[in-house]
Length: 485
Ligand code: SF4
Ligand code: FE
Image 1 (tube, rainbow, N blue to C red):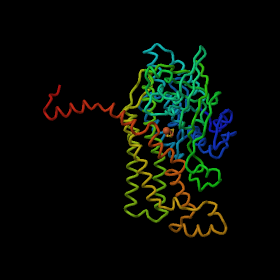
Image 2: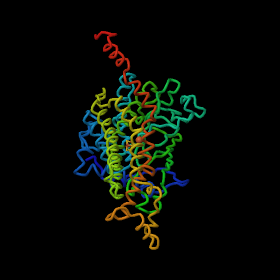
Image 3: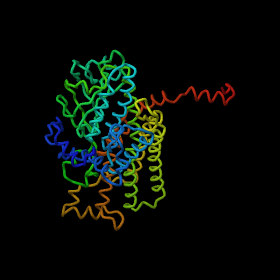
Image 4: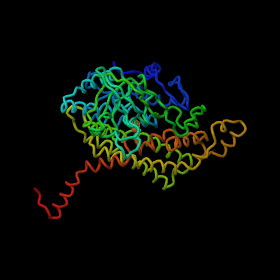
């Protein structure tokens, strides 16, 4: 059976020889590092739930390649129902971890690459789809984590890749021979890169012929020679070094981003999925972004469920649950959260089959989904902070709380309603802080803005997909200017 246990996943990470840097030092043991481990636990949860009787039917699926039961995070969506189940799985994962669980970028990359390599081969006579399918079969059979890596540093945004003063600002092919290609550049903000077995590179924008050295896609083991990972800081990250379970807000789970540098990295020919076919770069970017914009209609909603729960719980702990404005604010949070979910489900239900057999979401609805995600989690977070109270950002540490001399003051003066221990109130406040301002805020707040493309990227796609001419015609017919044909 292809499925790995969470323990086997941890074991497999220990075998990787990754070059990881954090706080100016090389990290020798990523698995047990207190800053990194919560992010590993989040990915491990995708393995654990796949073996949990209550969730295995959602978390696993029969592979379209082998017929074996595989983790849905490695699956090619074979129907609109599969697309819906993907979003449901992500909501579940968000509920269980209250953070970014990282494995979606690889899932979205493989689904985008499957249809694009198929269509590229048909049109150009290239042979990339077979390379891609054999890579994916290896991923599915071994239940591996893939880091889908798209975002280049981009340098001067007004210049195309080939016009940049520094040619490495977009990842590019620097040389090629009969065995493969050598690439140089970097991918920024790479979610889950250090927790992945393989890294799958895609271009970050549509390319012109002048940029063809930048039209490159491939997958290689994450510990390949020449790859360096520089760990991304998160707000309040050093609290994880203090050993306090209260102060971190979410002691078990976290997300992870890194700057990944490719310093003349060799990629064998059979792992190359695009090599200068600039005409297909735009389609790959659009499809990956579309899938990831759909993803946010699941993962952010699951984290939102935890945040709404924390706000409602805090209202009770504060003795404010009966106030009509508090009840109304919670209703508003639920309304906003379920609106995001509705978009994630809708773009999935309206998905369609591509020539490779893999299903693609409705692009207009997926972009509307993500555009809403750039706004609603901010409003949900604002309401959660409103209900939680200012103590969320002024509260003393766990060390003070546990101190024999001053702890009793905290116990006495930070108490809310009778019957609820002060510690519960502190834990819940720290959880709200973690999601809205702390480590999980990377995934819930700022990533809601910029992840899967900044708001303007969705507006361009919405304009492109909306068929405004059709709407104008409808108006001309109704107003009597045109006749119905
Ligand atoms: Fe998955 Fe959401 Fe994290 Fe993206 S932000 S990897 S969709 S959990
Ligand atoms: Fe993301």
